[in-house]
Image 1 (cartoon, one colour):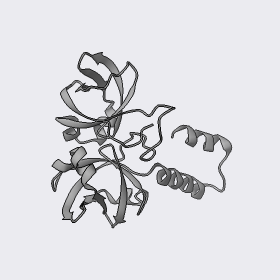
Image 2 (tube, helix red, strand yellow):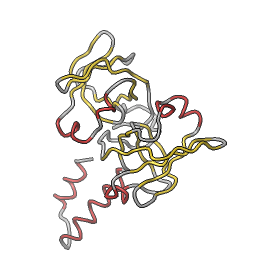
Image 3 (cartoon, one colour):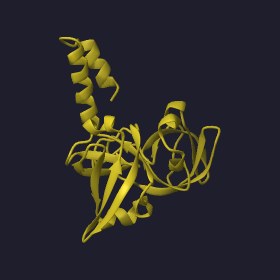
Length: 205
């Protein structure tokens, strides 16, 4: 589990044969879970200047290749004794969004981000969303897009300062919205759910 608070701007050294090599100050261990631009990956090798991660076919089928090159957001998995900040982030990307509009304001910058309409029910006004691994708050939700406002501190300390209209983004919607939607969809399919089904769903989160 992650919090959506970026710990470091790391750098992609190489990406070949599904192996992503990252240059980072973070001292990783074999088997560690690390989020790169919001994607939860497993450390398969530790290097003097960073670590290697492996991308599964499912992951590669969802994310955009631009998300695994150049500078990237890095967050190690949350430890049991860590302070809980941000929001609950799984590192499971739901879709790739696109920046469609950027508007500078007096004390922040508005981003309008377009996504496939099927993901809109899981994006809640004033709720949480993860964009390239960053925990953010949704301001408004539209038919096929949503608006967020980025404060100067976040803009300065993340890669969002480099985003332009057309930039692709890894999007993870709110885990609780997905959870509730899943329960209601199953409930509509049959009158009631047994404890086995409920336990199975809980184990997937």
